[in-house]
Amino acid sequence: MENTRKKKRKQKHGEAGKEERNGNNEEAAKRSDETQAKSNPKKKMKNVSPYGNYKHYYGYRIGPGAEKEEDPRIKVFKKEWFEGKDCLDIGCNSGIITIQIAKKYNCESILGIDIDSGLIEEAFWYLRKIVKMESDGKKNTNDSNVKVVQDVNGSEESATKSSSAGADNGSRHNSSGERNLSDIVSFRQENFVRSRLPVKQYDTILCLSVTKWIHLNWGDDGLITAFSKIWRLLRPGGVFILEPQPWNSYEKNRKVSETTASNYHDIKYRPDFFREMLLDKIGFRRVEDLTSELSGTKAGFNRSIFAYYK
Image: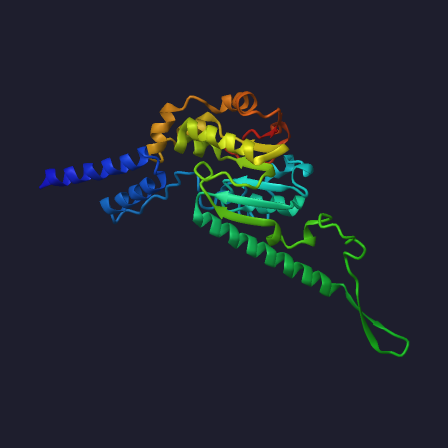
């Protein structure tokens, strides 16, 4: 009887391993969670994030009330990369920095994509919340600017002092308040490595603390696919903003799944080779290191940031 149970367990593990080797990482991760739950139903299952799809990520990175605090990385970004531009944020998580960029720099459009549908739902929730807060704030400001004055006959008139009087001269890019934020920001669930190349191109593409998870889950081939795809999605003169995780970070997360553990040992192109790959192999013209200007990051998140120009 015991031998039969062992044989069944081996068969299940074998099936999961086969699924991972065939590239069906998401299904294999789901099966792994189910197996863990069945093996010890009384034990609280550990929340595993095999794609770096952490819940409350910005809470760890920025702190409590992350949606109200500006991400320190934004301080090193340049206005001309975003203002009036079409932008793409790969691996947006819950969309906090995506929304902050749209608010601060008034993009023409910015799309955030993430492999985790739950995080995309959370991103839409944050977007609705911030749009409502801004709408309520504008209403309160307008109400406070209404003054009651007496005319010569003693009757009352209401005069509204507009804070934007004379400012709207037909341009849609004077300030981020002129358009509803939900008209600028959008989110979509997508596996960037596996998805088809869209027709639309972008002026600026961000990939912040995502390359490690692409690398661990899809190996060197997956990373090269992602970089090549980014280059093709960029318009001429476009900017690719990259925040790669260091190699020692790979080691800490290599065991989150059988796939990541296997790929970790096969990786040849470590992060210190990315610069050469992007310039010499992919085709970017030049790179700008923004790291020296970065300040205010929490311990463990003081990573290098680069801007590659097409």
